[in-house]
Length: 322
Image 1 (cartoon, rainbow, N blue to C red):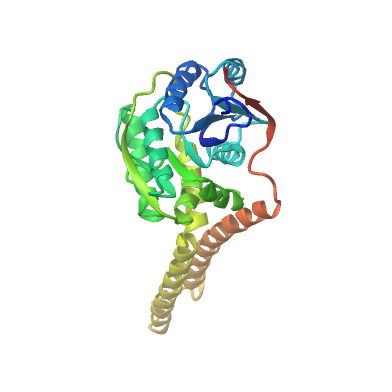
Image 2 (tube, rainbow, N blue to C red):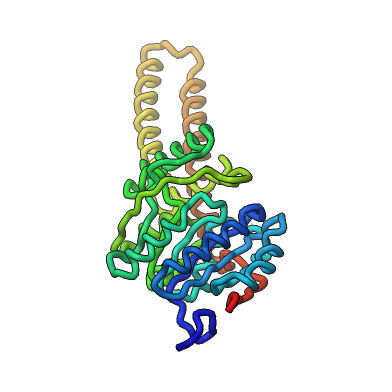
């Protein structure tokens, strides 16, 4: 019988973990993963993707993973590409039949991964979503996150859980489908729901962050929301069509009013009023329309470049401590 750490032992479960500014939580995270590996019915690997982290996360991981009691991979991005590209990189190198994704900040309990893998291994679902029912975040951070996901659910996909999606698990087939869609400026969460498959939700409570602060800034939220709107909805084009229709209606009404005023001698400077109104209205519609169409053109242009979503400059594999 092969050793659980030998290269011939098949890996059944992979845990993908994007890393950015997490040097303080790496050691306790490895302890939690070791506990998780013992509870699973099959061999597990951890896939750490260091996304251009400015601290010593990479060096600490490279040192710690040599003696970790589970198999692992350490991927280093050539620069900071973002959390979702890091997850995609992890999905691409993961070797397990079932893949879970969690953060490195210790805000999700390993118990959640156990539930994810149980549902996937028992063939109850192809995608498992963590449904956050409570969170121990600071008040302003919690408010901002709730507002963001409310907007996301309202405008993009009402099937998204009210607390959003931070962690999920899926089969290798689903991961392959996600990787097939190499879209620039898109939404991994949106794609996860777009592909369909059998999906279940697992409720959990988000734990307090032991150290540091969230990198999910207001600017990143707005950018992610806009990418999702343009990738998964027709809202911008619909708004442009509605504005154009309203513009035509208003212009027609104003034209009738101006004509009647001219016919009854109420306009002392013929031509001035209608010209100004038409110029102002048409300029507004043209500029607004160009901005919306330009956003689509920009995203289409970015995808024609065929650039990779992220670049992994190194991939190390560790068999763990035998």
